[in-house]
Image (cartoon, rainbow, N blue to C red; front, side, top):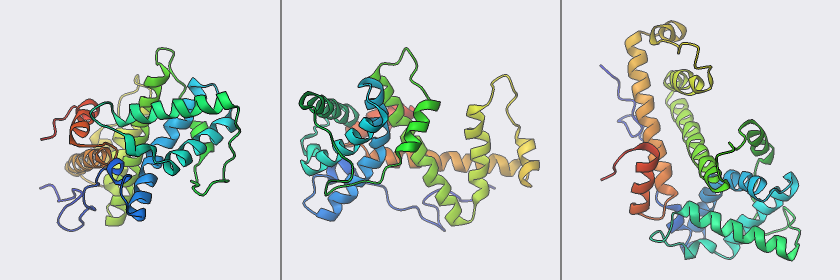
Length: 254
């Protein structure tokens, strides 16, 4: 019988469903607003940095300055207050704001300096630059499509990290290790090579083949919940959340 390992299961409940950070960014409560800004920046700074490098052909240093400057200005001037989910997705909104910001900086020939503002985020630009080199934009992708792809990549990456942390806290690392080995590492394998079997995983991890089946099913279910949880935080309302869930996972949210 499959063990109860779901996030939100009986023994180790996952934190309550995240609420929209876009809505929270308009709060009059400074702490609520700050947490919302942190969530938005964490999800969008890498796509923004890579987009600036690709579309605006900015140097590494200029892209760093522009990325930091954009989010600092967006927070200080409360750009997100004007977002209307009935007009466009938040991705489109933030990308439009970013284009406008970079264009204005170029037009005025201003030079932004990181660290000189009241709002400063610690962003690992070296990691983002490394990803940019390893995952170049395909020729058929427009810069706009590239921005969306990198946002999706970042969303899934954050969900993987949270899944790993969840199982670590539960002392059930084998669930994540199997998920990583079978579902994540296999994505980078040569497709001409046969995918690892459940039987070989059972031998590798010292569990039964039935355990492999159950643990993977649980990890996939928990991962899907985390993706939806993160997605809800990054959309401005239920309609947008449902649209994005349908587009990303092919699921209908009632």
